[in-house]
Structure formats: C-alpha cells, structure tokens
Length: 333
Figure 1 (cartoon, rainbow, N blue to C red):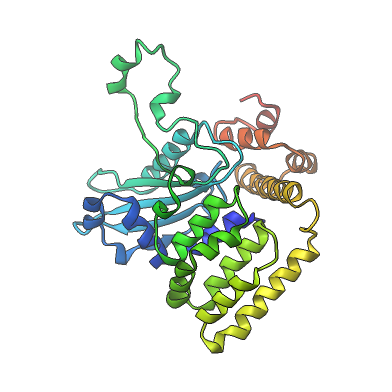
Figure 2: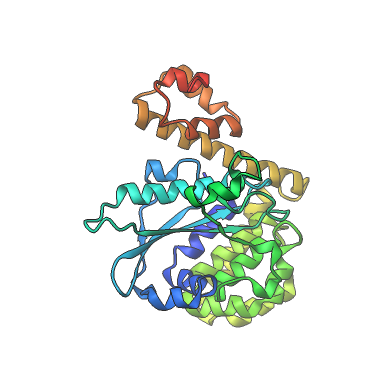
C-alpha cells in the first residue's frame, strides 16, 4: 500500500513525456544535448538490493548517450516529515548497485544518477554531500578528501522554489506544484491558479491523467470541488469527456466523505499516511528477509509486522552483513 503522494508521483512520471520535460529542466543543457532522451526506457523496480531502504516511489530508467553507453537514472520522491540524514549514503548505494550489476568489457563505469524531489513541510536540513557524513576532525578532512569518495546530491527541494519555478510542464509541473503546497493550503486554490496547466495536461493526456490529479487533491485536501472551479474545468473538457470526468469527480468526493475526512481531517490524514508508509515498509522488509534467509519463522514475521520505522531501517541496512537471521533480529551484526 502506498500513500497518495507516492501513487500520484509514480503516475505522473511513469509517463515518459512528462519525465523528459522534467529532465530538460533539471539537467545541465550540455548533459541534455548528449543524451538521447527520446530513447529513454523504464527499468524494473523490483530489485532487492537496489530497493533496500529506498522510497516506495522510486522510478528507474536507462537513458542512452548519443556517443554510446547509457545513464542509469533513479527518480526518488522524499516526503517524510523529517529529512533523511543518510541520503548521500543511500544515493551511493544505488550507484554501487548499478556498477556491480552492469559488467562492462571496457571496464568503464556507467553513470548512475539519483534525482531527489523533496516536498517536506520544512526545508531540507540534512547532509547534501557524502563528505558531510565522514567522522573525522575538520582539520584533518581536507587532507583525506582526495582519497575518499564524494557525492553531492542532486536534490530539488520544492519548498525552496517559487511556485512558478517548479520544474516540468503541463500535468507534471502541476503535480509537483500540488505536492509543494500540500502542507500549506487547500489544494483547490493551487489548481484554480494554474488551470492552464490542467488544460495542457488534458490536451496531452486526455481525461485519465487529469482524473488522477483530482483524486490526489481529494485525498490530501477537503473533498468539496468549488463550483466556480468545477465550471472552469468543465469548460476545458471536450463534451464527450465531460460526463465521465465529472462523474469520476463526484465519486471521489463521495469516497472522501465515506472515509471520514470531514471531521478531524488534519490529524487523521497525517496518521493515515504514516500508517500506510509504515505498513508498506513492514511488508517490504518481510519480502527481502525471506529472499535472504528463506521462509521466516512466525515469531520473526510478527516481530517485523510490529516493528517501528527505526527498527525496519536497521534491518534493511544490516541485511547483507548479518551472519544469520537470529543475529540480524537481535541487532548483533
């Protein structure tokens, strides 16, 4: 089970056209010129080692260089209530996974890049470079730096950008705007300000993607679509799509009511998202443990299904260094 942000993010940027628009805004123009973005291909995400301790919204792609070879791209959404202090290490693990699973006869290493989209309620305050994690006296570190790995995150903190500076176009840009503002306001007002982007998304993708946008808003804000905004959206949609789209909007509104979002909305929504994330993390941990150690004893499965987030992250961090399942569960690694 994913939360609304994960599902919406995956829906938007699984679309190759929207991802290309995003990359054109985020990568240096010379990098864009050297890449054959039109040949971009999605990669499977169900890879155990690459998925350890990574967000559920990870998307992976291969993009060929025009001169040969390829770039391994990982797109990650971070939306947790606190920033991850180990993010540079997580990005390095992804790179190491790519290198270890992509043998090259010329011994050259493929470029692996993680783009991190962050939309937390507060600015990113954790490390943005691997060197910030080294446990060494500041006076000694400059002399060690040439001999140590370095990695600077390609991190986009949506909250640091003005609304109009959010990357992408059309449905993708609107989606990131909505995520940017999800902690601050009723999202119908964001949509009302940028109906032009909704119209562009409808033109490019038809009603299905824009219904997904409405679903996301219903899931994270009050379920009443303002009548004036409804009239604007209806005027944009082709007559043949109006009934289906507005019927879907009404169904989403009713679902919001049935799920009890009218009373205690803020507390219930936050708790529900956190529980959804925790449940998904528990299920994923069970999956990777069983792949590493085989069928799990019932007591271990129950222990995982009642574990908190810190324990789950420890288990996935130490999975491949543990000598046995008992040692891993006891923290004796």
